Length: 147
Image 1 (cartoon, helix red, strand yellow):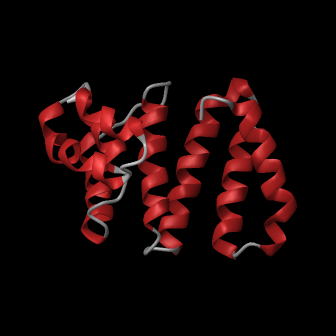
Image 2 (cartoon, helix red, strand yellow):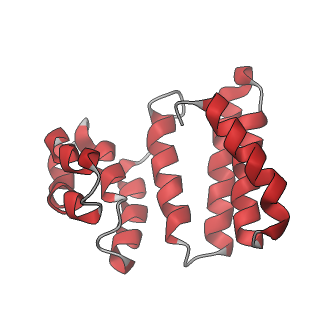
């Protein structure tokens, strides 16, 4: 999310291959392509459209935990750059839906960031679990330090 130039290269390649992808994965590709192809001056609009696209994927594929995780991380990221989070509790509720199905999902990372500057103790349980969700990734072991 921090290197749009590189992301555009990857999404272009995904676009070239998308005819071989499932409908669900084509929707991810299209959502990211639309976001990355937008005008920089329309950043807020582009962000909202990506959120809307992810919500649409969730509605059409309710068992897709990754769509929920992508939505949460984008809400958090965009909340730091001009598209405010109107309810941290609502984002947390989506994360809890993920953890109900997969308690070791690495989205605990996003939950820590969601709460670390707001009410950190809410994410204590995620801080305790995160390192074990991706034990080979040092950043995951670092994250509890945010709480």
